[in-house]
Length: 223
Image 1 (cartoon, rainbow, N blue to C red):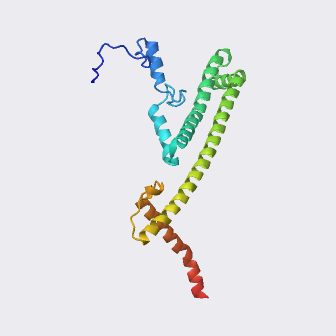
Image 2 (cartoon, rainbow, N blue to C red):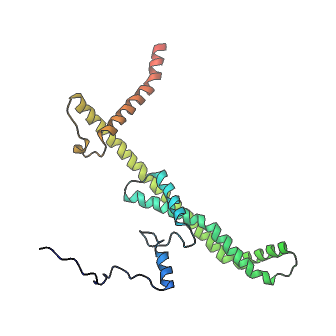
Image 3 (tube, one colour):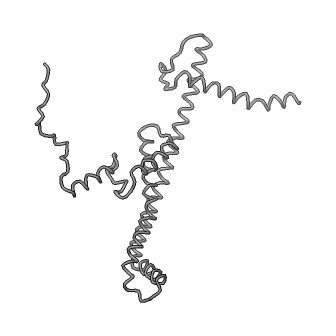
């Protein structure tokens, strides 16, 4: 039986949030659009350029070429942690500038440069705890980056070694079928490589074997 379409006046489902109406609600909504899709934490602040963040992340994806959900997540984490690390110097500079401006009224000098230097020195003194917290935050991000990079490299090394063994096995089976003049589909043995990819691997392997054996032939000819 054909089910008739729902009437236009049907109420939204509970999973569909209402559109924001107030300025504050619209501001919160715009901030939500910058949240990370996996964890929900804010990655790109409203004062930052979302396109610049996406370009930053794309550079990591292009460099590491992740495969699978785990590698995707680790590369995302690398991009996010470096984005946040790059933000720290600007936060520190802005914080110190504002703190120094608060100290200007207490400076008694007619020399503008001296007043600025003294205000900055007092800002360092009065805000030492906050500056230490910023430093701790930076160190944590740096350690997170190092751990994530180490884990990603280990996982990718294991994957590449597994792919290398699989490709070597596929090459042996393909060559056996070619010698017997039997068609072969790599997928029937569970391989994800195409026949063209396997043939390219065989050609490269044979050329490398030939290159490595050339010095031995030259040495044998001389002796």
